[in-house]
Structure formats: structure tokens, C-alpha cells
Length: 143
Image (cartoon, rainbow, N blue to C red; front, side):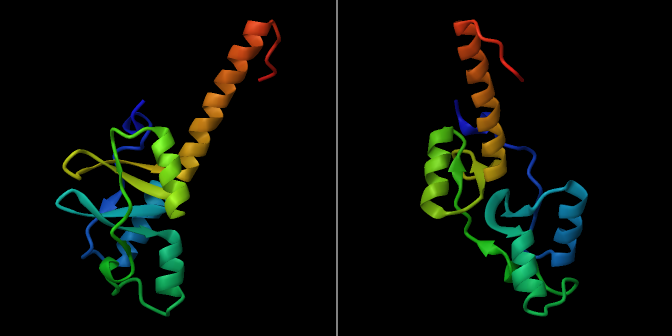
């Protein structure tokens, strides 16, 4: 199955010209740990809560005057919406990142997948597999 079937959409986004405080408020209100930074609907960066802690607070910058472009992680690793879960896992391992914007064939942002999303998905799948095995063998699943 393509990863776009499991990705979160719509994605919380801002442009690079916004100030960090806008991102902080958006993350708080939307209950997310990152904002995908876009230009013309294409991901150009990611700003995470960790980026804010280390690059803004940790450097003594002002979140009200600091532009996102100066503290975001630029050029995020993206995953094509046609790729599968296995491709996502391999990309996570290769790049050591937790969040991946999902893009269509022209690079437009269509979703996001995080390590947390992947773990939750795998948990659901393992549960289903356990139920299938136990029902096939006549066991009772304790779920």
C-alpha cells in the first residue's frame, strides 16, 4: 500500500517568512511537534520543537522577531506518495530523521509521516496479525 494511505493530512504548514512565535502557537494549538515550511505548496524546510529549543531559546534569540527561515532545518528529506512503508523505514534508517513530508509527483506536499505514526501503524498491524494467528489456531486473543 502507498504511504499516502497512512500519512497525516492536512499538514500544519507555514512559510519561511513567518516569525517563530507563530510556529510555536500553531504547534501548541494543533498539538504537533513540527511545522512543515512550504513555498508554492512544496516543502522547503521543517521547524521542530527541538529546533526552537536549541536554535532559538538556546541561542538567546527572540521568538517574536526571529524569522523561521533562519532557524528551520532546510531541504527536508521527502518521500513520494507512491512509496510504501518499507521505503519509509529504510529512509528513516538511512537519514536518522523522525519526520518526512509526503509529496506527489511534482513535489507538492500531500501529507506527513512521523516515527510516532509509523510505530502506531505497526502496533495496529501486529495486533491484527496476532488476532489472525490466534483465531486460526483456536486461541483466544487477550486484547
